[in-house]
Structures are given as C-alpha cells and as structure tokens.
Image (cartoon, rainbow, N blue to C red; front, side, top):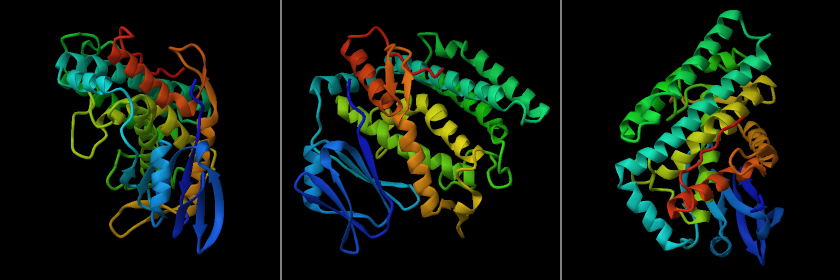
Length: 349
C-alpha cells in the first residue's frame, strides 16, 4: 500500500523555496526557516507571495511532487508538475469512455449515490452527537432532510442504466439543496459569527462559506495529485464535463469526499471553537477572507485529519484518510482497465 506523504503548506508571505541537494529549503528574508527532505513530500502548496527556484521545480518534477500556487486567501492560480506519468493506454481509455453517455452516466451515478449517502450520514451523525444542543424544530428539520436524502438514494436516475448524465445532475442538485437548507442547523456554537444561509463561492460571502471553500481547494489539490499519480487525466471527467482550466475528474471524485472530509472538519473547528470569528475579515467587495493565524490553524487540523485511519468499505482494510483520494483514483483506474465490474465509490460510515 502506498505510504501517506506530507504536504508542505507555505503561508508566510515573502518566503522563497529553493533546493539544497535532496532537500527543500524555506527561506524568509535570507534566513532558513525550514528544511524538508524531498522524499517525505507528496506536494507543496504556496499561498500568496511565495516563490520557488527553478532547480527546486526541477527536483519536484523529477520526484513527482506537484507544486500548487494559490492566492493568499486560497484561490487557485496554477500548478507545476513533471512529465505525465502512467500508462498511455489508460488515458486513452479514459478519453474514449468520456465520450460515452452510458459510461459517463454509470460513473456519475456511483459518485452521486456516494455523495448523497455521505451527506445523509453527516446529518445523522449530527443528530446523534448534538441532539441535546439543537432546538426541537431544527432536529425535526434535520430528520426530515435525512429522510428526503434516503428517498433520493432510490431515485431511478441513480439506478436506471438508460438514465443520462443530465438526470443524474438533476438529482445531485436536489440533494445538495436539501443538504444545505439545513446546514446552518449543524452549527451549534458561535452562531453569530458562523452561520449558513446559502452556498456562495466566488467570492465566499460569510465566514463559514470562506472556510468551506478553503477546504474544497485543499481537497481539490489532493484529489488532482492522486489522479495524476495513477496515470489519469484530472481534466477529463464524467459527472463534470470538460471545461478549459477545470479539473473535471478531480471534481467528480471530490463529490464523495466533500461532506466527510471538508464539511465535517469545518463544522468541528467551529463547534469546538478552535477558530474564531475574529480570524475572518470582509473586504470592500464583500468577499470574506481568513487571517494568517486562522489559515495555519485550519491547515494543521487538515493535516491531522489526513493522518487518521478508517476502515475502507470496499478494500476492507484500514487506510489513512489522506490516502483515500489515491485509493479511489486507483479503483477508478482499475475499472477503466476492466479489472473491476464497476467503480466502487467511497461510502462513509
């Protein structure tokens, strides 16, 4: 089994990353702040005014360590990676099947089914853990939403082999609305600073949306890297169609993980008061951003979460959370090669 490697997140503005043999140096104002052996890294994520030397980029390309550049507040800019790896026959099969409506629908059905089930699990877990601190009317709303999601799992669009991708997207959209309509009820602390009215993305318009968007960006980086590792093209998806500059396949696989790896962690940080409202600022444009201290707290929590172990429902063995994107990418590649009868999405229990 593949080992979980670290992701180096660089948030200090003005940092300069360079190479010293087989080591990554992080320097700030000519002073070396950190030395990290390249073999311990799976990726580097740079926030804001952070630069890298060409020799370091070359080393990372050789060792398959992707470097992602984001704005200081988490908006994706660009990604530097080495030569495309993996079996060219696998990518050709991926491209061929992406042109098949029936095959695309099959993958989309699996992904959306897992997403709906995982959203429902998040609601049920909240009912179990916070029923004493949630008002009775909100408990009823959460219970009703969980029931609606359960019914959606039986929607013909998710089971009929003749259902098209558009039908699957329609069911996914209905499920997302049902889930986010009660998402605010999952916040049981700091309600004045962290509330949820609706999903806002570009830009996020409140503290909780800013936190969710940040986690989704981190998750997109990890899923993209996992797909590239097994030889798949992150840009060619099945549920999400092709669009220049968009990692459509990464967005497909992300759907399984958003509720359990991003949403739950965001809620945990808020409800346990590990982050505070004062760490967020609204700009003149209405966008909400995190300060440096809050961003570092979020990154530490995300890294710790990735180190936890869970039982993978399909493999039947314990897997570190950080390896889940790689496992799902590997299973998708095996399905495309014909080694599996279907793609087994990730169901959280």
